[in-house]
Amino acid sequence: MSEITDPRIKSIVEAYERKRIKEKERYEIISKTDEYKTQNRARAKIHYEANRDINKDKYISDKVFHNARSSYYYYRKADKLDYFREKYPDKVTILSERGVMVLSE
Image 1 (cartoon, rainbow, N blue to C red):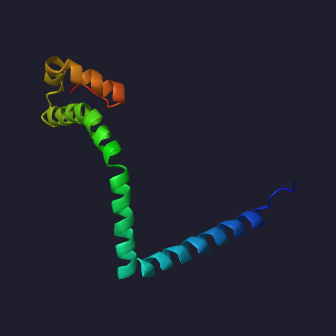
Image 2 (cartoon, one colour):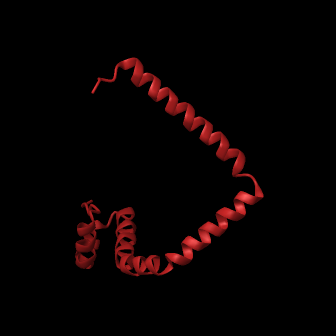
């Protein structure tokens, strides 16, 4: 297999950039039409209906995490992270499992 030279790489990148510019221009023209908007809304509605249960389950499973993260940000803003650690050790555990850094003041 032949090696790709620098001029060839440059021409490939330039062709890709030209293609992206044309696609963006085409999208900007098409996205303003009423037909596109109605089709896009219909497609979004179908996707929402198909994934409603999945998103609901995800929301329910992440509810505890979001609550813990919200409390963490509240206590961090008030400079009371030590109090947060003492009062809510279970929330600290949940946050540390998900990778949210619970730092001290």
